[in-house]
Length: 110
Image (tube, rainbow, N blue to C red; front, top):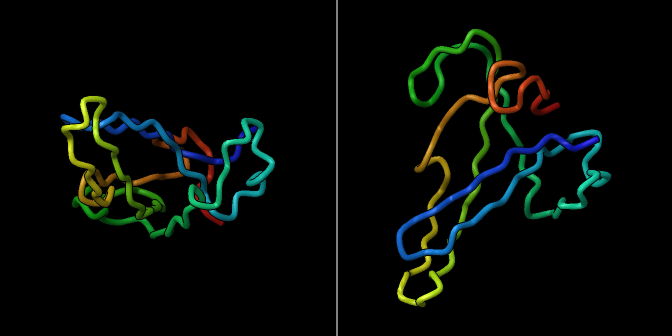
């Protein structure tokens, strides 16, 4: 079995592509994840919210969760790119619900 997690692929001109994932703090599988990809820095606390508007104004029928973390991209292979750090909240916001999203039914948060 796998711990609850989300995958990301982030790209920007002149910077190296990053493929990573984050894990849900408090997941009962946690450190026993079958792929052994869990690191302390990748475990994040998701904040659960009741049904209602999300940060981007959508109204969700049911509870939803959000998480904040930083992604840093390294310079590209030619060395000309500058590393960049942006909060994912600046890049994309979307609700993570228990049954209608990329987690496809995996509960998020305690």
